[in-house]
Image 1 (tube, one colour):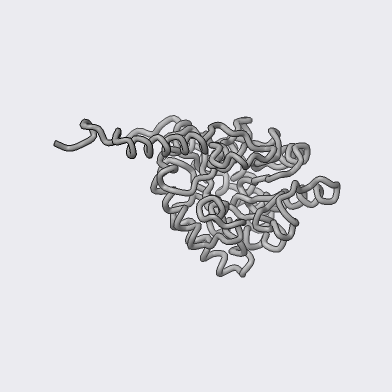
Image 2 (cartoon, one colour; image 1 turned 120 degrees about the vertical axis):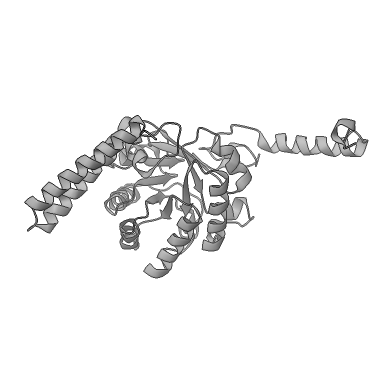
Length: 319
């Protein structure tokens, strides 16, 4: 089968990069540090030049290319097979199997109740329903804080379930593990600002980075996760000016939720954007559907048809 124009350009980039790396290795063989620096620069340049594949599943290279091209990235949460099947037919760029599923799907009061096993089950369901989407698996509460081996086992579980990458909340105390995960061949998306797994330490769901010291800490952490090799960063509930500044500083794309329009993309919880909870309406949320009443009306209509004898009719019965 002949290669498409995009595939041909990717192959050309790979050949050029391979030739350049061979030349650099020969020139600086006695200086490993300089070699690593040159390799890193070459890889970043190749990532930026690699074309996005329109109409198909994103790959890890497309995120950087989208930022460089000024193209926004759309993301929504997805937790199960039936909704994944619908979203697989949508224009959405990527699906996040977030640990918020502990609340939305299982009824817990916070995300800290999500487990690796729970997350892997939902990642597998979403992958089966959305084979054509880039799927992000959330690393659940404390899964990165128990040491390298437990962290890698959790990463393995989410990736083997069908994830294209993992998302990790926070930075302090776990940058080495994040770098190790990246070095192991697993893409990592970082998450800063309001990190829900730390909601107890924050004293509730509150905007982060309002004062100078807190803002500086988030800026510093953002640079550190990029340096650790993360390919993208979620910024949650931070002032829009701070999010815009971080987005301009980093070479990796930022995905905002409650962070204003200055990020490189946006993410919302699917059930929230569909208005499934009519009483949940934080400032950053826009309802694209009155899902609560639409679903309620449909179920009540069915009930009325059953109790009145209007369902099933003759056309809905076998002879």
